[in-house]
Image (cartoon, rainbow, N blue to C red; front, top):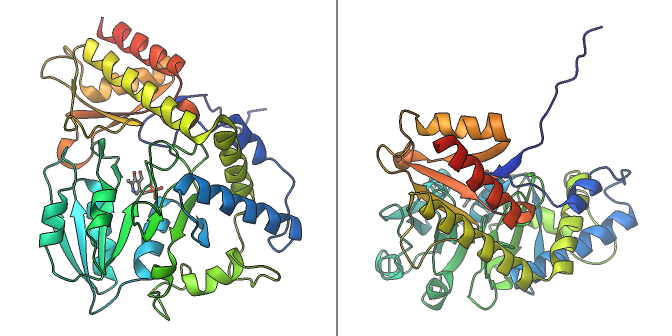
Length: 368
Ligand SMILES: Cc1ncc(COP(=O)(O)O)c(C=O)c1O
């Protein structure tokens, strides 16, 4: 009898995300189900939120995983705070800043896009000069499309009365991030990057100052923080809003447990060391680095493919051979750098020297 089961292969996930999740996070996905109002599950959710506060570097009461991927976090972080009549200054130095402009515009707010050359960090002087009194400044801490890290603390120091929104999808858990210390009002992330968990949740944190500015009826019902806060925070009875993704929250709880058991500083140092090894190894193989020097993101290395360096192969053929022959996934370029740049992730459980050694060996074989 023909099998109807798909055969799936183990991969080393060195693209821009998802990464290989920590074994603890994978194991937790198989735990017996609990109800979303079960006191045991509420205790696990509370502890997950507390662990998120630690990795975000915040004491914000409203800190929890939004149901949905990083983009759901982005929407929640925007639609609850701005709408018609508001102005938002958005830094665009890659794909994800561009996505924020789109989300802001759909709320009816005015988005002022401060465009940057790809590969460069956010220019805070230009952000401040863009508008005298915006409702919000928005920027990406770690641009996954270019491998650039920007100085969010510098923006926080100059935000004035505006709210500061930081996309921390590729930074949370992998590089230094101090939500409270840097003056960030709203930050969101995704579970599939440096937190080392499967995709599906978007950790979000909101300052008390930002809570005071939440719109009474935001454009989105599903992401309405007024209602969600009654379930994810507080003591005693919790009000049903939507069914929590129980298994994913159990998995995030376990992944964060693994990170905190290793130690947040140690995990960040591991991301730095492994990211450095990727960059050095690729340079040794004759490739160049795309992101501006001094602003290179540890967990995501953006690599320029020099003209003719791959012989008769296209860059897509090399990636396809890495995947098919060696089980290694790396990412291609997005937007204007498609076909010219590779994105190599070393995040979460993937951020191990053994994976770098395997990738570099495989590439050396392919390139002959
Ligand atoms: C910086 C950044 N922001 C937002 C997103 C969107 O997250 P998701 O694809 O999980 O919806 C990503 C995804 O790669 C990202 O890298």
